[in-house]
Image (cartoon, rainbow, N blue to C red; front, top):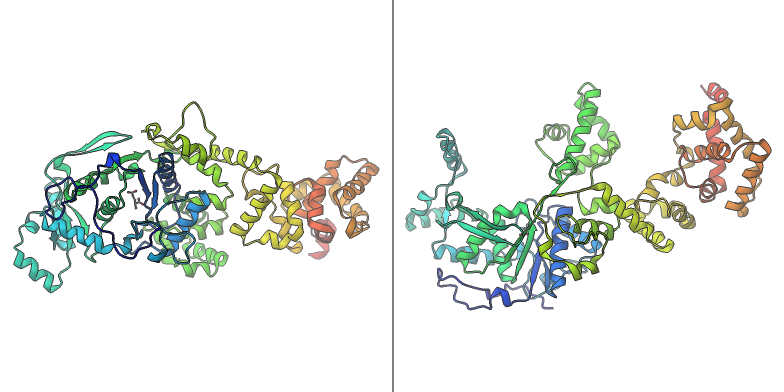
Length: 609
Ligand code: GLU
């Protein structure tokens, strides 16, 4: 491990004769140890597509005893945040993926160059700006890049002209490359804003893709693109190419949405004298409805639900805003949701990722899981998610579908990456998760629930249930498809006794049917339950008491259990009734039965009203 704050020397492969600056003779790519990298832009949590990219790069490096690098591409100053960097590191570690070079997950400050691991650091692009400037400078010296002083208005005029003449717009470099040097110097001295553009070659460019084969872009379609922005920051293209070369990356596995960037990257590599890494573009991931799976899906779902609500409420945006505000109080200010931004959101002018959360909370609708963290919050196990992600565009063959990271390390093979789009099948993932949960021992399941309660609910259940948490976990073990289901379905266990809400349908069915038979059961059971001493409040004692009563009244157990269940939980669904009552404890059970009778007994309702 070598921590460094200084930039590494350029010692990468060079095959070009363009620039005098490049006179190295490095080892050829084919003789080198395999190096892959995952290079997320820290603009939010890790998307499942990003997780698959990380997984495949990790697996390929591990399979070949190579190096896997984590590099943070944070040159988009407006959108990159330290919080997202931490979230991505956390998501990767939760998945169980480790890296050989990059930010240290354990460091207090992963940005601290001293704490970063590896010889090619720093691994944050924002800490490598001089390097990109230096490479842009070299390209300018070699005549492969130039300063462009065109203002946004001038560029718009060019675009409008093309439109008027019904020809496709393409940036015209003529004026910029013909500016005399003294004029350029004068403009720079005056502080005129400018960018640096790369001069694309006049020949076709072919990407030799390991998945898609040769992909050629015609010279006529190539356009000069920006490599340094007016604030001196590099664009993604320049930083990505320079870092892949300096970090000696041999293979770039990334999603097909980058395919059209790759000719630009290959051209840059050619001009800079870098040997191109081998590229493998992976299939895109689609939703079941055929749309591309993206972070915007949450906005789409929330927008549709909010619009439906508006339709039923006379299109009253004031009311919608007011109601969301009631539900989400202080949260709205922190995310900047005002009536105006809400309107913009409904008009699709913004897809802000935080607004959907507020809308979903108010409308009580689930949002589709898109980020790794969404799946974590919904109670998926990392091994199930990873297993499923590995099958998006890849398969080990022979109908093998269930495997773990060790299997991937052994068997991952680029040749088995498919060309066609992958479909994200949520039911299949849920089936994987159900199986993974079933494989956990009781102890493991208990531990996982403790962790999940801590992560997703600030330990509400551990605090609320204390030493009854273990029996709570035990009674949900058999029936859970996710780690979240016990908490979502068992919310009533930690709800205040005076706040249980009764489902009117459950009341009708379990308590009022047959001349209030269920209410009579509850009334009858109060004294015998009362008489069980607190230290004998066990499943067997409860079973005995309740079964005795059922027999005495000649009632089937269902006729007795259901009223009890509704009284203590508010609905007709709960774990086995005796377990449920034990977890609730004697005090809560009797308090809830009493309140249920009070609220639902017809004459008492009349008296109260
Ligand atoms: N920062 C880019 C992204 O997040 C990396 C693309 C690449 O892997 O080259 O999409």
